Amino acid sequence: MKAEVSAMDLLWGRSARRSRGPRPVLSVAQIAEAAVEIADAEGLATVTMQRVADRFGFTAMSLYRYVPGRAELIALMIDTALGVAPPIDTPEGWRPALRQWARHLCDVFRRHPWVTQATTQARPIGPNELGWLERAVAALAGTGLTGAERVDAVVVLTGHVRNQIQAEMGIAADGGVHLAVALAETLREHAADYPALTEAADSGAFGPGDNDGFEFGLECILNGIAATIATRPRGAMRGSGGDRRPAAQRVAQSRSDRGIQRRTRTDPGHQPYDRGSAAERVDQEPGEAEDGHRRPEPVVERHTPDPGESEEMHADHQRHPRDRHRRMVQDAVDHG
Image (tube, rainbow, N blue to C red; front, side, top):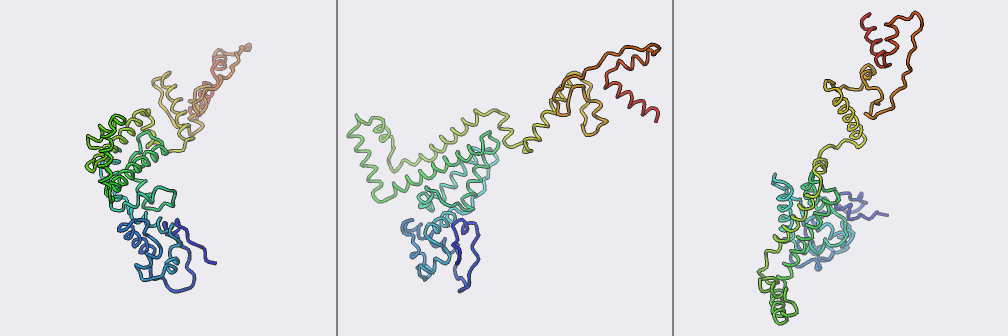
């Protein structure tokens, strides 16, 4: 039995191996493009497997050889309509980058207004849609926001673009302007009950000329993101795009750095060294381990001189074990 191809398989080019039969004369891309043209001209509701098949002179059943159903077709349409996300051409930081990104997305939605309706529910996501999300999330790198927060910020921005297009569609629809005028007149008749809305309507709200809402809302969202970023510690901003070493390695380096700082404070002439060899660890302070942590000082017993012991031998016994070790190494070097 032939395995059915899923929407994710179609979106990402993972089509199932074809069974025996006639050689295909259509491609999934051709079918998706034809469906987009229908939706652009007549709306998403008019897109059916039969309508698309008619474009090619085929039956609806023959189309199911390429696309399992309408839900999979709509997923393909969304990714086709969005296209490849354009690059963000600004070196001035995240704010102008997101502003440019939102305007590009708004242009795409205006060319394909049905996309705002098709993208309001859970669905398989294709490479083009993920590419748009990637560009916007990447623009917020190094701001101190977490990865989840960056995605949430872009989702809010996308919702604003979608709402703007839906509002424009409502005004442009049959009777949209008439409804807006009727609402303004109704508010004036009931101004005592809705004083704030009446004042807003008198200044142009709800009317066909109220076209500045997109830019105003966009700036409000960007201001909110900026205010959130401003609450983050400066170190969080640096760290969000900086050291990408494993956490254990960063912790070990931090401990080592703290140990070097302690030695430098007590001995300004001390030079840091690599703790790689046993000979170098002779310089390690007593009580300090290789990870920079302090350890209890070793108990050094007082030496009682034996009868006939020379002063030099007694002095040698009184030295700290580390100093005796160092002298033994030096004696070995001096005598070859």
